[in-house]
Amino acid sequence: MEEPGFASPADVDAGMELGCAHPMGPLKLADLIGPDTVASIAESLYDEFKEPLFAPPPLLRRMVQAGLLGRKTGRGFHTYDQVL
Image 1: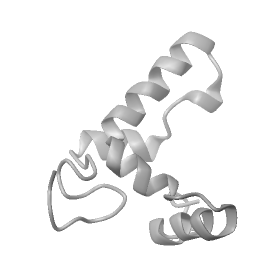
Image 2 (image 1 turned 30 degrees about the vertical axis):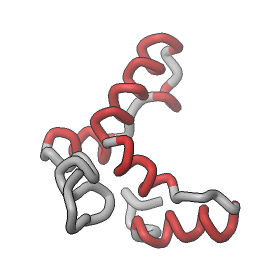
Image 3 (image 1 turned 180 degrees about the vertical axis):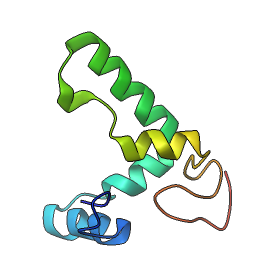
C-alpha cells in the first residue's frame, strides 16, 4: 500500500493497529527488525520456495541499498530521533 502511494507508512501502521488489533504496525516492526534483515529473510524464503510472493519488494531492496535500515540508522519507513 505504501509503495504505490495509496497510504503513508503511518496510515498503514495505524490501519493494522486499529483495524486488526496488532500491537505494532508492520512497517514499525520492519523498522525495528531492520529492513536489511527483513529483505534477507524474504530472499531466503524466495530461494527456498521459488514463490514470487516471498520475494522482497523493490521498495525494500531500494531502502537497503540506500542505507535506510530503520531504527539502526534513524530512518526507514519512519524517521527516528534516537538511533539504537
